[in-house]
Image (tube, helix red, strand yellow):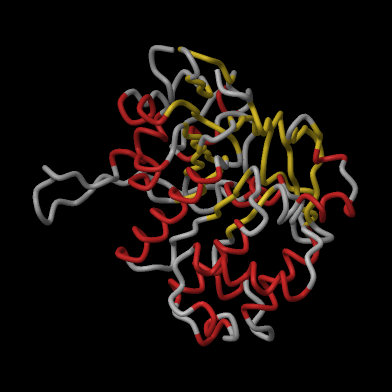
Length: 326
């Protein structure tokens, strides 16, 4: 067994709203081993990004807060860590690749200033050393003419180059863990492949662990060692990547996989879709939330299904209607 770098235990994150305190993440548990990649997949609104931002305490304030649970990073609980200590961890020991590079980068500052800040704050370099280290980071992520580009503003760069800058920021201090929140969503297919290859290459060089959040199951299959499938703010299935693709057990996971096109899919074939809609946070039931979507009735809507291990490293929320035969 690989050594565990990050362990999340029954994490609950909620937001204060006009309708009261609503849980966006409801008792989520998983772990990430050193040097491994964990994929988190699910539809929009299932809690993927809120989970990731909870780990580094970057929730919208003052509405968002962690109510319960533990986030053990190298044995230290980040939930109880002070804001000052979290600032020392973020960007240094945990790097974050944000979803939209144009909003992740400050449009008022040049690329060099934003990169240099990492080295000035976390590595204690002087301005000249930080500038030189920033140029080396641009070379690392294959930015052409880095000596010129380091003086550019974000709007002067293409989407793919801005995403590379965000990756450089995340990797600058050689973190132990990278959280990549849909790093290729806004990019075309060719640039997506380049960005993913770049992330994997640097991850292997540095021995870094990664949490990859994405809608793309193809990216999950190519990149990840283990997969967490989220629905309604909960983990409904978790298993090694090959197990998820070859032996999915939860109805929601099966629905996601069935919606993917395959090489042998006839042209112009309508792909299967999961019927129904995801309920809003204020309307979530306490029981099985996928049964709620399927408009089933009965005790399964009132009683939360048991989350159990059905085979080695394969966990599932064992609703009898969504996981037949378990």
